[in-house]
Length: 307
Ligand code: NAD
Image 1 (cartoon, helix red, strand yellow):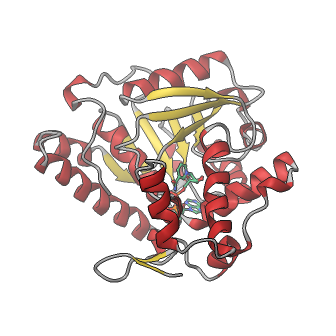
Image 2 (cartoon, rainbow, N blue to C red; image 1 turned 180 degrees about the vertical axis):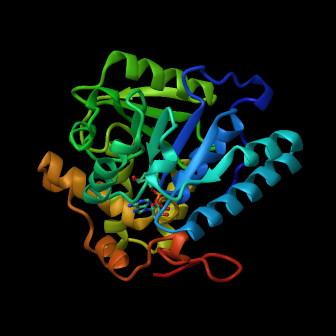
């Protein structure tokens, strides 16, 4: 990860007083990035996942990314060490019982998320706020699987979290103004800028970005261009920093497919039909960078196109 940019120097962070401890459920690409910025901003972080090794892997990755930030002079070694110390493993939801905010960043699957919220809420204190980092799923529907829809909100961080400035905030139908205000101040305390989206499938960023990626996959599927030609065209011809297929691999092809399915089903418009080639890659387990294979093969020294 190119994690050398933080939007603020750590000494400029001012944690908001209502939040001392933040729980993170799901310690994959996003959960680890979110934990990284939250700990660096001065909050305690408890990380949960299906297995302890996944949290250990996430902590090792965060350690490497913090070290890289130190070597580039973006943060001080002391701040990196303090951030690491603020992070710990939460084996059960009971370990999140004193958290003021819990951010869910588990796999993009509504059934998985609903199950998490139903099991999590009884362990939380009544004042705790719950947020989902979902890329596409209805915040109102997810809120309905909690005991506190008023204190539930969508907080959609961007990948990689330490680098990207934006956090989309999405109110569900029941989200209280107090919850929204706190989420906004919390995001700003991390040095992020917010954009507000209504609760429509895939919100703003992915409503626009994912159909473009899906179209790039159709372009490949129909043989209009190779992986290399498509990515080069968009990098050099549209000035995108990454080609769309490279970006799809970076996001994760399972996440891309889930978002397209939510758009297709939620908006009932055939223009959002997931490309069959995307489905095939996901079925093969070629999920992109995190699986070391997607539209590119990452197992060697340099990424090699797989088509
Ligand atoms: P990922 O596959 O890297 O990580 C998901 C993690 O969730 C895995 O470690 C998995 O073990 C864990 N998990 C699954 N079920 C769980 C459960 N019941 N309890 C605890 N942990 C569980 O995926 P990711 O890219 O980090 O995406 C996570 C969320 O963030 C998704 O909702 C996704 O849509 C969203 N998101 C992703 C991106 C992106 O670019 N990848 C950007 C913004 C938001």
